[in-house]
Length: 260
Ligand SMILES: C=C(O[C@@H]1C=C(C(=O)O)C=C[C@H]1O)C(=O)O
Image 1 (tube, protein in one colour):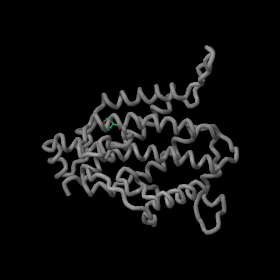
Image 2: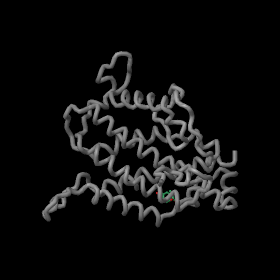
Image 3: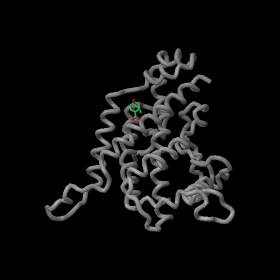
Image 4: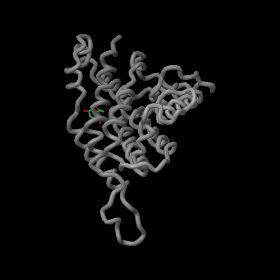
């Protein structure tokens, strides 16, 4: 069965750049669908206000409450034992209550501590969401927060796959990477790992996916009049401005620690 996550050959230790890129392409589907689902609801801005919900014993926004509680139960079920998964609120998470699954150890151990979720949380709520959804409040706060979390988790998984991308790039050309790693040259590492032509294809493909997945499907020939559930150019903006730069930041951070 195809594995949709970062390491497509998770049964073995073989990593290939093509295999990981295939999995990043598959994850575009999850991200675009999660955006379409979130865009069913208006902004519902009160959910994001500190202490607006007055939850006894809790200080924070309603969305933070829902994310923390969801991560708590998922941690008990072992979700964060998977090196591909990173919590948004890692502090004080409970231990798993289930028997541990043995995930293959393909990453360098120092990579485990890289967690970009604070930056993902900030750009998603402060910059991207207002572009994606309409203004307004329909009161469906719990369902809206659940769909925010689906978007955040899909984005986080994709961006942290940068660890696997960096590992395979290092294994493929250790001689090129070792010098700049030893001298901790961020800019040289960034140049070495960047493939502009691949990035251009990614932007075009996600825009096309948003167009195709977000069109109205009817049984007669009258199409939805070119209406789309989300603005396709937003998908390409999301990748250009945030997803790919953060993936590359994960790659650089991983490489900087690769020889520890
Ligand atoms: C992920 C990779 O590294 C970089 C980041 C990319 C991305 O986030 O999609 C694409 C190309 C590279 O500049 C890759 O080479 O595939």
